[in-house]
Length: 394
Image (cartoon, rainbow, N blue to C red; front, side, top):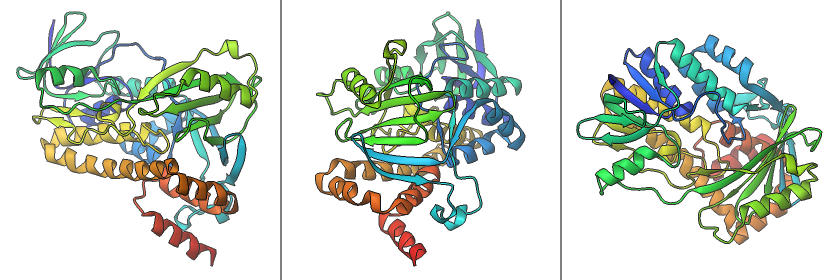
């Protein structure tokens, strides 16, 4: 069977759904091809920052956004804590008014955590409700990039004018395109993420907690999510000497997790530092989300970049302007490069030592940094952040 759409989207995660919803609202026909069925298993801690919330409201509209959040929100946490190894460095209450930037006073600054598989399912349901075509349990087998024809494993063919690669860090589209055009820049190796969600009865820890030095130069986390507690860590691409499974089991032992045999370790690739500098090929193929390497290196956040890049791709396709997409994505690149800079400081002996020595003295600064630089999309330099903090103290 042969189909024809203005846009073929490969992958039904947040980037693919965001793109599809935005295309439909703009009057363009589209089809999403997803290799699994919803709800699907998805490794993600579920951090849903303020900038993610703003972007999703823009994509869905306020009423649909409220409906989705009622279904997927698992927890709102007040406390953000940092550890070095198992030793507490600093703990911040983000709801305390004196900790909030002036622009965020009198607002709910709690950290939101969502059920990621359910979020993906709700977004794809909204896309289908708008009239979008969804092909589940099927995958792209081959693509003729010149003729603009995709062949699926089921044998179906889909003709398109534009193709959006929203198929994750191990993008099939990227591999097929690199085989077709050797000049296309391939990304480097991705980082490895390991994660489990344990019952509250097996580990009772509240708040959002980040652990440094569990993996040298990287980080681990424990997020409180209602009846579950999410535990995970990241091994960076160049850390070949790190055994992630053994490190994760050791971390869980130190935390005091009970009944570990109930929780098989799950892994996924994250494209840390693997940004596609030009995420477009010949005005017809657009890379978004993880497939474009859009993941925040400091926190591992990917949902915001997925939603925003999907929306940007749709707007650019509707406007028939590749330059628009490149211009808009440059902003996301700037945010990621800022995160990469801070992440690199934690790898340096002097700066990490300075941070670990002084963090406990400045919980308000840590809180301000988190709210302005992670919850919201600020490009302020570190010196400007310090200056704002100093001014607020006076």
